[in-house]
Length: 126
Image 1 (cartoon, rainbow, N blue to C red):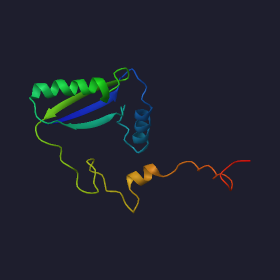
Image 2: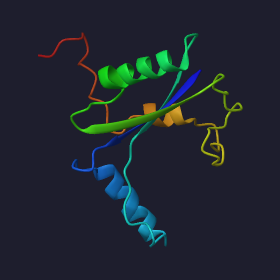
Image 3: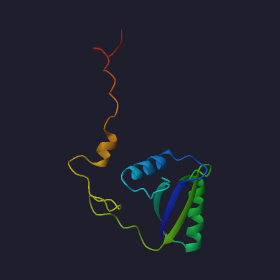
Image 4: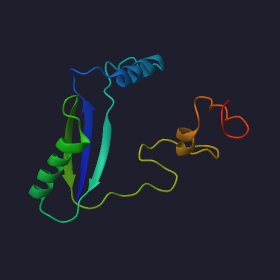
């Protein structure tokens, strides 16, 4: 069984990411976009058990770990089966695969700030 969980900031919570995405979409000509909330999408594959038991367990997962209930709301649905894996090199968003030799992980790991100078010869500062 697959639980598809969506976690979003509560309406009363400031969402700077959502505001930035809305402004970007408006700047690209999507002027009909009035608001955006940026959250998380989580798939949880569950083994065995009934649908009622799975619903109860996923609810507990959301309340205890997947969502911070002070600032986030969550919803989920359950469906039979297993989560399909995306084809090699492709995500589920339907966008174009990454170009060049740099992957998304490489991009995330690349340094954004200069590294500190190495210690002077001998390994100790004077």
